[in-house]
Length: 139
Image (cartoon, rainbow, N blue to C red):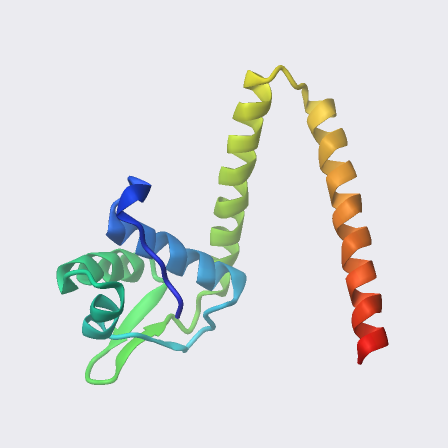
C-alpha cells in the first residue's frame, strides 16, 4: 500500500491517509479481503504517530471500508463493492464540481465545457491506441 503525505498540503495527515485508502479501494488497487499495514507499520513508514493511523483507520472502519480481525490484522472489507461504487461516484462528483466551479469563474457555459471534455477525451483515446499499437510492435 503506497501512501504519501505532505505537511505542506494543508490537509490533516489522517485525512490524507483516509482519502488515499478510499481512492485505492474505489479504484480496485486494494481488493476485498486484502490485508493492509498494521497501525505501527504504517506509522513507521509514514513517520507519524500511531494515533494518526488509529484515527484514519477508525474513520475507514466506520465507513465500512476496512475491518479489524482480532489477532489477524486489518483488511479491506470483504463487501466493499457497493461502497467502492459509491466512493467512485463521490470522487468523480467532487472533480466535476471543482471543474464546474472553475468553468463558471472563467465564463464557460456547459456546452463549452462538454466540447473541451470531448476533444480531450478523443485525444486520450487516440494516444492510448497509438501506445497500444506501439506495445504490440515491440512485443
